[in-house]
Amino acid sequence: MRFINQAAFDDAKSRQMALGVDLRTKNAVLDLAGKVLFFAQTGGILNPSRFELAQGATLYRFGAAGAGARNIAKGGWWLEREAFEKIFNFAQVWSISVGMAMRTLCLVPPEWSEATLLLRARVSDPLLAWRGLANAVITPAAGGGPAVKMPTQNDISARRLNQLFIPGLAELTPMSPGLRVEQEYPLSKTESVRGFIYT
Image (cartoon, rainbow, N blue to C red; front, side, top):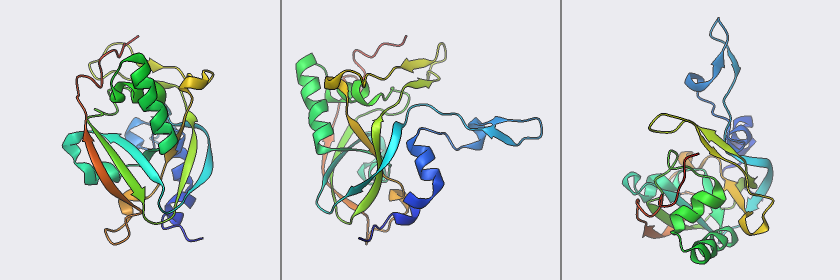
C-alpha cells in the first residue's frame, strides 16, 4: 500500500518527535564547543508503534482557534474516534469541558495548546502514524515558577487512551492533503483550563 507520508515517517526524527524529543538546538544541552549532547524530552508517547490509517478513518485534533483550522490540521498530534469518545465520556462523567478532559487524558498542559478549537477530519489518503500511550510531562510554566508536572495515568483503564503522531502533514500539498477537515467546533478558552492545577 502507498502512504503519502512514507518519507516523513521513515525519517528517524519522526519517531523522536513522537517520543516527545524537542529537536530544536536552542533547547538542547550543549557541550563547551556548542555540540549537542542531548535533546530535551517531555511528553510524547510511550513505545511508539507503527500504525496505518486507512482512507475514510475519522480523526480529531485540538488546537488554538487563532491559528485557523488549516494550520491546526497540519499538526502531527491526532486522536482516533475511539479515543475522542473516551475523552467526551470522561468530560460528561466528571462535569468538565471537553478541552479539560483532553488535557487530563492526553497530558496536554495549557502551555502547549489553548484547546479552543476542535477539528474532526477524515483521512483522504492512507497515512502512517506513530501510536502509543501518553508519557509524563515536565515543562516550564508559562508564567515562571515551578515546572508543570503531569504524571501518566495509564494504569487507570478509564484514563488510558492511545494518541497518534502523524509525521509530514505540514509538507503535503492541497491536492493531496492526507486528510480533510469536515467540522470545526469552537471551545471556550476559560473552560478548557477550568480545574487545571499547577503543582
